[in-house]
Image 1 (cartoon, each protein chain N blue to C red):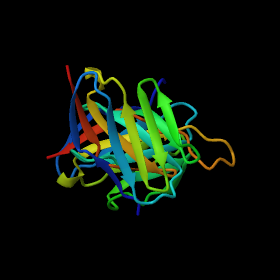
Image 2: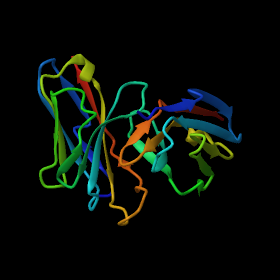
Image 3: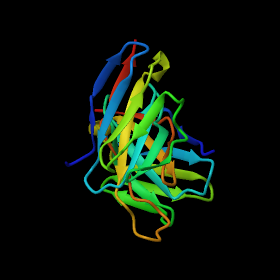
Length: 119
Length: 109
């Protein structure tokens, strides 16, 4: 597709429910990121994949958060037993591979986000 | 831990004015600095990427500079237009970005 797509765009969950958020990356983008954006704040890093490998999950706030990218393309962020503090916009970003040996990275492209509201 | 600060938090200017948005970061060992705009209820739109070896980048009416030694970047917008109204975010880092809270810009017709 032309850009990063995310679904659903909006999700309302009752406290304690499990949710799954999907990210479809730009074709050929091997790097994929999940960020969480609370109201009035900048995005905060959650986790990073290169192809199917999850190389950094240091930003996941608790063990209720789980992300996967089994075939190195589509990624799913799962939140178990949702809590009200999980309410936020979840953003996915992808990036094409850079040149071997480069000391910099290419730009990240963001999807429209999924707005999660936990009641 | 990288911390990014954006000043001012909000800015209102009349149409046609030139303006500067500021971004400062605490860890100068960054690989990239990227500027984005975010419209209400939308995702982030990439504006400019400055790689670690670069000092500035330009796109149309936008010019971004990077001074790693002082931990600062600026985004200059020339001849502002009402369509420029949005929140502007800077992200600094390596493979992942650390963001500031953004500057909310309003351009008044």
